[in-house]
Amino acid sequence: MNTHKYKNALSILLISLVAFFSSCTKLYDSSYGEILVDQFDPTAEDVPAIIGNAYGSWVPILNHWNGFWRVQELGADEIVIPARPNGWVDGGIYRRVHEHVWTVDEDIVYQTWDRTYFGIATCNRILYQIESGFIPVGDIKESVVAELRVLRAAYYYVLCDLYGNVPIVTDFDVPEGYLPEQNTRKEVYDFIVSEINESLPSLSEERSAATYGRFNKWAALTLLAKMYLNAEVYTGTAHWSDCVDACNQIINSGAGYVMEANQKSVFVTENQNSAEIIFGIAIDDQYTKGWNDFDIHMQTCQPSMQAKYNLTQTPWGGMCAIPQFIDTFDPDDSRLTANFMRGQQYSTTGEELKVTMGGLVGQPLNLINEVPDIGFSEEIHGFRFEKFEIGLGSSNVLNNDYPLFRYTDVLMMKAECLLRTGDADGAAAIVSEVRSRAFQSNPAKATVTGAELMDGSVYDYGLRTQSAETHEGGDDIEYGRFLDELAWEFNQEGRRRQDMIRFGVYTTKSFFAHSPNGDYRSIYPIPRGRRETNSNLEQNPGYVE
Image 1 (cartoon, one colour):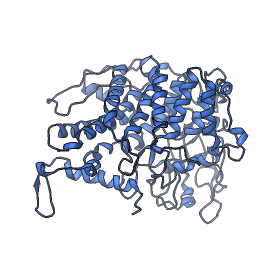
Image 2 (cartoon, one colour):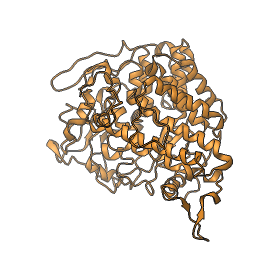
Image 3 (cartoon, rainbow, N blue to C red):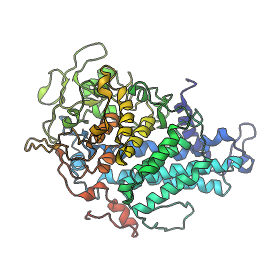
Image 4 (cartoon, rainbow, N blue to C red):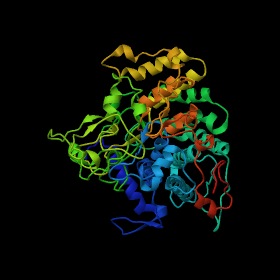
């Protein structure tokens, strides 16, 4: 094992915790058979094993089928799953999400709700076990409890962003038949911010193998900055200066977080040592065995591309980039060439790959920036995704850690807040720094001015289907150029919906096959089945059951 492969150690600890603390009241010792819990005196080295199970929900929340990643991307203006020769209709769910006509019964509505509340329940259980003395943590109790509170707050951030009005549950020992009350989105926001701020003094400031994949102080501050950045959406009141303050604490921390010289370094297979990752979700194909634990490559690569990477499984090939989005890139932007597969595809031995299904069988697999319609496409249609390196010989689970929070995001959050509070030139200096690594072949293009960031978007919004073509442009979007910068830097990272909502675009602009379908679509409905089992839950406005 690579001694610097932090994620292996964390993955093992995640597994070990299940056997250690799931339901037993005794711990076992290789010398004496069994020992009582009160004989267990954990040290700081034992903390990951104690709390590791609480982190385990991140993978299913984010990456499993119809999870948070899809919610954030499929209804936005960068990614689409059109019908393919091998299917990808699945009852029309992906089309409904793209067109913003999802219902209260969709699988994609249930999945993030259920998986995230499972993570919250796990946090509550471990906190209860610590407070009751079942898990004795001694002198490290304060730091362990603080970390679990922030982790729980991070799960509530997912619910606040997606559903808004959700129950806040902090107790584990609830009476039989307990039905939690529903909280407003502002109450959820206030709870998250309070939990983070109260916990910050007790969190570790260390950036090391011991804190990798966990909420140290800087990961917590990044989460806090995220809350402040979206505060106006969540509560109606902006907190731009608070966001800048949180970002500055990270920037000035001396903890060693930096922007990598090459963006790709953040997303390579062995990315656990990247100094840009502030909070990474540990994924290792030796230990994370869920079928959909991290399978973006399977969802985007066309079947014959198995030979391009010598994959152990045949990919399914549905998801691609929306052509309108690709058209926004400067041709010299390295993020276009590094993050997307385009053109003729080849095997590892240099053989030209061919189309295997549909009306173009036997023709060269030459990926083009065209998708005729969401209801019809061939295998060549649409650029595919490769921001996360697809390692040779990969299984259906990639071996890359998922960088949920990274340092460049901190820089861009600060830049956005400066822009919105009148310091456009200060914002431009940061954006130019971020752009510099994407335009190393043409450095002059890296520089952007404050005036340019004040301009509208270069995205040509409008419908692009077989039955309709319209051109709305993006000139009318306030700070639209900054929204473009976010798209170019953070595409494929499961966040585009959130950014579009903040800039007032998600429910107001047409793109590909999507037409505006009501501002209430900026949050998802409470799943029908969860309302049927909890009479305290009211449906989010606009949704009909």
